[in-house]
Image (cartoon, rainbow, N blue to C red; front, side, top):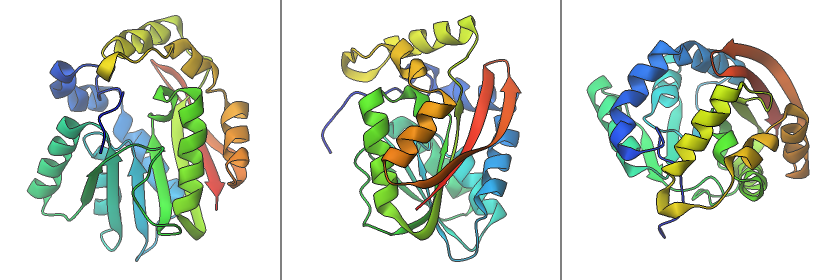
Length: 221
């Protein structure tokens, strides 16, 4: 796989050890549980998370639904290594692949549920479109996408942290993080989902944190 621009889990590789403690502090587990509950995962399903990071959401999904196959995709090999260690300690099977949301290395109609949590706003506008088209391609009939992400209307300090994180973006990407957030409003995300061929895109809930408002979405194949 060619090396490309991507944002490490904490903006910089050196900060990766802080990712899980910070996630716990911010109550991300509760947000993940709500997303897993929303997804309506059933035995035999194949569940894919795009931008899985260190594997917390996937681990929760597997523990909650042990009879499903879970697959995680992320461009950050260091984060994937942490995820592999977590699943190994838990004695659970997982498929973890290095790759990008815009080039999913999976066959057409091969996934029942796609999950994405707090990753989508990192994608530049063109990559958002490409990623959603790829999600639609890999979803099986009756499958669905379940996405949690930050809303456009975020506090000033969050915009600063987003800009700071993008300073650490791999290979010196030149995308403006302000453009990422401006393209991340709820109407825009739902429009992009529909444009990609996903049906019935809706908001399913909201969550408040120190990082502002987060929105839950669902869209179907």
